[in-house]
Image (cartoon, rainbow, N blue to C red):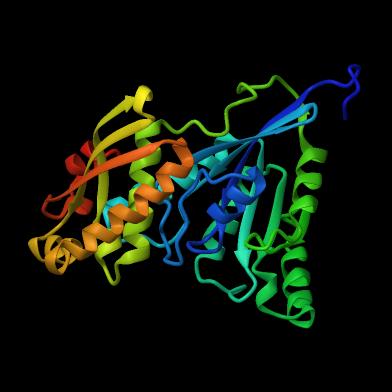
Length: 299
């Protein structure tokens, strides 16, 4: 790979699949750093996130996408449309499912999308650490018979099993092309988007029921004070009702404090600086069903 005579290889790869199968976990594992938020809850990812892998003589731009699923709200329709568009913009497609749910009801819709794209595609069966080889083999055989995939690769994104095989298969399908991104670039996310996503991740991890899905985060201000190694962040959490605002703030402000502390610790690792985080909660009635509100909040 390090021969000067060899042409540089590059390509864009979409990671698609049903909600909550480990797409963002896979992206973070492939890159060796966290660029996408993760939580045990489905539909955590709302926008496409680009993560760039720099290899020896090649570059892969991964596009993490929202889970493709049957939609109800305008927000969900926006998320699914974003994922489906990605299929037409990339060179290679990774479809990921999880071993415990090979019959996920959203899989047929994704397969239908794949049939229409006719691009090099790989099926990744994630979470193989949750079952036995005896359970895995029929799943591999069933999807192999579809003749849609160049390879079917079992992995555990959480534990790193099978990741080398994924990169090997991807590398074999890359074509000569330029390095689209500089070597020190891992993602195309702005600092403010990264901050809003990390806050949103902590909302997903700390709250229950409908609250994570009814919240959005916008960053009003970021001020860097390098002489103090300090980054000051002012951000707003938007919810859809007064009752949700009460739940998010919590008794004596305990919930919002816990979310803020958790987000601050994560952000300090990312920015390698002290973080002062000022969080407030605002009610934006039914924002996930309002086209103008969705646009204003960046969806």
